[in-house]
Image 1: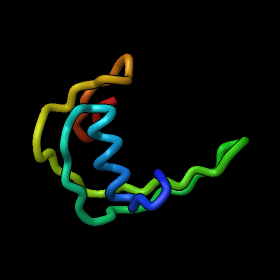
Image 2 (image 1 turned 45 degrees about the vertical axis):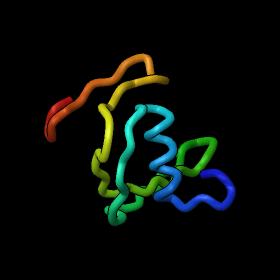
Image 3 (image 1 turned 180 degrees about the vertical axis):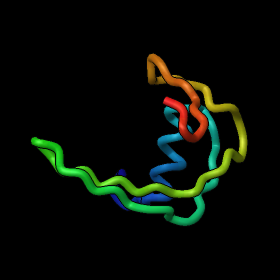
Length: 71
C-alpha cells in the first residue's frame, strides 16, 4: 500500500497496473497470517468484480485460471 491509501484502493490500483483491468472491491472475506522463516505475511482477501477490461497479464510471465478443486 502507498501512503494514505486504503487496502481497497491498493487493490484497485494494483489490478489496474498488473492486469490492465478496473475492479470494484467489496467486503473483506478473510485475513490469512503466515510466518515465513524471514518475515511475517498478513494478506487480506476481498470480494471483487471486474468493472471494465479483461484480465491481461502485463507483469507476470505465467498464470492460469483454476476452478475450485483444480491444481
